[in-house]
Image 1: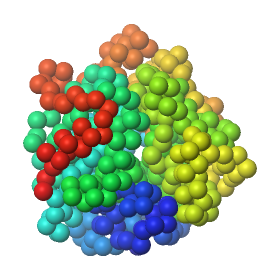
Image 2 (image 1 turned 45 degrees about the horizontal axis):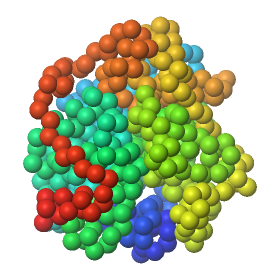
Image 3 (image 1 turned 30 degrees about the vertical axis):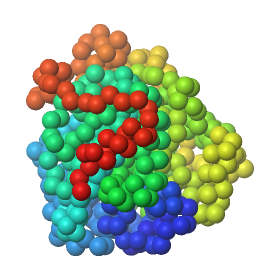
Amino acid sequence: MKYLSTRGGMAPQPFCDILLEGLAPDGGLTLPETLPALGADTLESWRELDYADLAARVLGLFIDDIDAAALSRMTRAAYAPDVFPCIAPVKPLRPGLSLLGLSEGPTLAFKDMAMQFLGQVFEYVLAQRGQTLNILGATSGDTGSAAEYALCGKRGVSVFMLSPHGRMSAFQRAQMYSLQDDNIHNIAVRGVFDECQDIVKTLAGDLEFKSAHHLGAVNSINWARIAAQVVYYVWGWLRAARGPGQQVSFTVPSGNFGNILAGHIARRMGVPIRRLVLATNENNVLEEFFRTGIYRPRAASQTHATSSPSMDISRASNFERFVFDLIDRDPARVRALMEELRTTGQFDLSALRPEFTERYGFQAGASTHADRLRTIGDIRRDAGVLIDPHTADGVKVALEHLEDGVPMLVLETALPAKFAETILEATGETPEVPPGLQDLDRRPQRVELMDCDVRQIADYVHRHALR
């Protein structure tokens, strides 16, 4: 299995090389040259596997430069009961509609599902090669804490995580900033998530700086994140489908397009997925694209601060991977579209709109603060299940796309405890904080506050990076 770049400027490379690189040298994103195929017999043979074994099977399709025994040890460690006491349960909400619970890990968010594996595979590959790695990432709330909890204390790796100052929930800030490990560096940037992400891409695109400081990525620009997320689509289908070939739809709250991209990959591999329904909040750039065919990211000043803050994103890092498929994997056209985006602020693929649903199964919808409050309250009252604001965006949109005879799974984004203020507004009750985290808001916090200045952040990385 070799990997190429969406922009065509990289020789095919094995998994372990692209794992440590993150962004491709030509500025593109890595993808397998060809996707493995999953037939009905294979899927049915996996029904009785536990999550760790299923992860080893699925990830083994993408990773052939790590032996199967080592990969199995890593998935066993990543998805152990002490890490995920309950893993990816299906929770019925209404007839035909269920929640796929992805937030039972250490940071109470779906990002743990992939990050715990990344923590294992980074440490393994770095030890095998005798190398060090400095992870430079950006977070709108959940990626940062999931990455830091997965990598804190790991040998040979340090994390530099940029977050938008004042734009995460208090719980999200406390989770990240209370970590005291020497290999964790939190940087709060005076700006929005998209500006944090731009700084990461600028430094990752500076090949001299990247090489000198051994920079890697843990955001979903890293293919390993996407591969690990494919696993729970297979898991969800195995639990929702009533038999071979039964189609299942998934609704996915998405801001950076990584979570739903994994569903797109699973569908292309042969998992019987009927619809991939994308749910956004007021920052509806992706919903607008699937409705109109025009991709028009917004400026930082136009990015709304909402009550589902992890989706307060106006430029989706993973979208280029889908566009690559949409235009028949033509890297020259990708380069042209990215240049058009850079110079005009948008590109137009409206001529391909019929393919969005007919070929790839995509639909989309948006949600508002009022929608979130109403949905949280309704689901609490009717199903006895408390959901977080991002998941509420998903449930609201899922209800608009139900089809008779097709089970719909909404991918849970986080546990309600991370967004207590909104939950209180919606239900009049304060969500329960899991054991071990009740004192989180009282723990000392360690964070550097910086201007939105790539030179200032580059200097900080230079002074603190592992050599």
